[in-house]
Length: 188
Image (cartoon, rainbow, N blue to C red; front, top):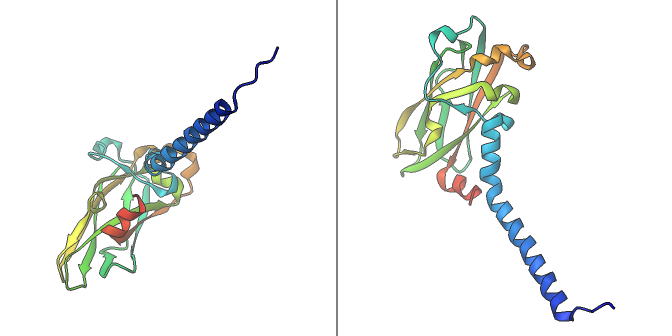
C-alpha cells in the first residue's frame, strides 16, 4: 500500500531544496573572485605573476637572456601621468632586475590609486617573479606630486627547462592604474 505524503511536506521540501541551492549559488558568487585570483596566481593564467621574497642564488643565473618590455596605462578617471622610466631591459634568466615607473598626480587634490598588472605572453607569466612592487599596495599622491615607483623582479630559472617557452625572446610587463575606489568596487 502506497502512503501519500501530505501536500505541505512536498512544498516544504521543495522550498528548502530551492533555498539551499540559492544559498550555495550566493556563496559561490562571493567566493569566485578570491578563488579565481588564487587560481591565476598559482598557474600564471591571465598573465598573473608570482611573488618572491628574494631572487635566486647567483649560481642559478643562466646565460640565456630575455628582453622585458614595460607598458603603462591609466584609467580615464585617474588624473595621473604614469609611464615606465625605461621601455625595456635585457636580463639573464634568474638575474634580479630593478626598474622604475614614474607617476605624477596632475590634479589639485590627493588621490589614491592601485595598479593591476599582467605579463604577456600569458604562458610566461608563471615564471615572472616580483620581489618588490608598487602594485602590492595602494599609492597616494599629493597634488602635483611626482614619484618613481620601483619594481624588482627576476625570471625563474626553470624558464629555461620549459620547452613551451623556448621561442620566447621577450615578454611585456603591463600595469594599469585605477582610482582606488573604482578598483575596490570591482571586488565588493
